[in-house]
Amino acid sequence: EISPKCVKYYKPLAKKKKKAIDLNEIGTPRYNLLLDLMKCQSKHPNNTFGDSKEKATDGKPCVKVEKAYNSCHAAIMGVGNFKGRKNCGEEMESLFQCVNPNASLPQEE
Image 1 (tube, rainbow, N blue to C red):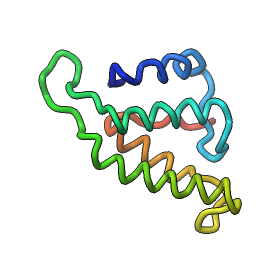
Image 2: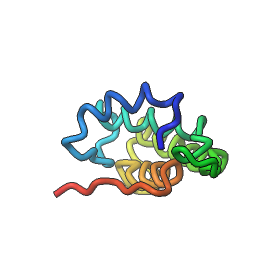
Image 3: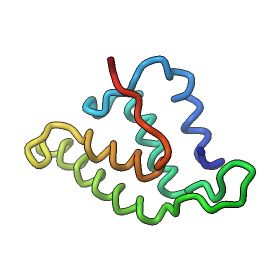
Image 4: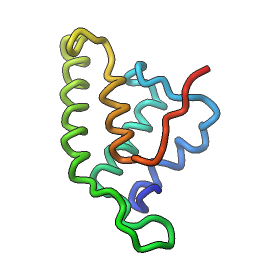
């Protein structure tokens, strides 16, 4: 579920859902849209699932995952690599899984 405060980040991404987002292509417009959505979801987790009153995941654990992503992003933009890699795909996937535990990332064919 998308938090109501994050719908503004989801709408442009949903319009372009025909193509999978390459998590290794840091800085592309679609990648940046997904990143904005993930950061928003981390700060504003959805409190309930649909009509039920069950609590959704708490966003606080995702703040640590977001910080790990930010460290990677800063290193890539600064020196061009992070732990020997030239992208933050693993960190982005971890952030996605943290804020959307029931969702899966579409795989490129």
